[in-house]
Length: 249
Image (cartoon, rainbow, N blue to C red; front, side, top):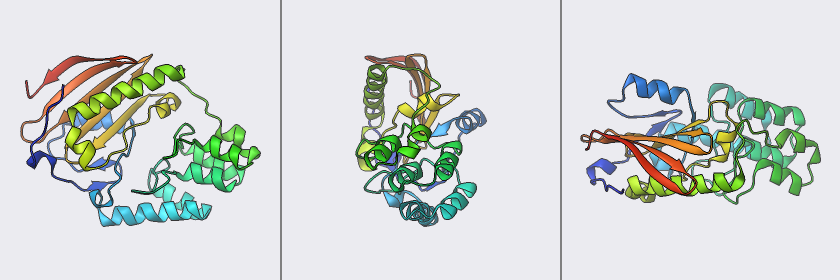
């Protein structure tokens, strides 16, 4: 299943908010990505433009210091409600920080209404509700309690995540290692009315489109560098099946 890329194919690209800089992406692929949420797995600051890193730092600093007017101002301009500091130690997004500080319920509710994922885990595995409960901020528990749209047993979700990681590492092992990528958490998909997640990969000029359908995933991936490849896989909690392959076959 694994196909290693050449050194030229693994050249680092810069990222901008919500858009992977890539040449030759078709209109259908752009439309598909526009309709889905995005997982930012980049942890190396040099993979982004300096301006983007600085703006992300301002958001992370404002949330860490509970400066909620500044947090909301930045989020009014950028769809970054689920993003941690690039390369940060905790992996906390603004909703985690609201749980940590015991923010006003109105502020916490606004972060949720802006699309904050209540199932998102920090680097230590804690969700916002776990943090609020540990710190005694019981007034926030109802707001932070996950309310999944897609019902999926935890063991099935864990199995899907394990198989997805095998697939991603099998397709682009060098890029996962080189860029120290945080691979997508799948629990946020259960919060989405349209359970799709786009995972752009630096150096790939493409990425992985992940869609939850019942207890399975449909994973479409493509790489447009030097001829490239495109594949579709069906992923279950204990297996991976190639459905379609193109470009490099």
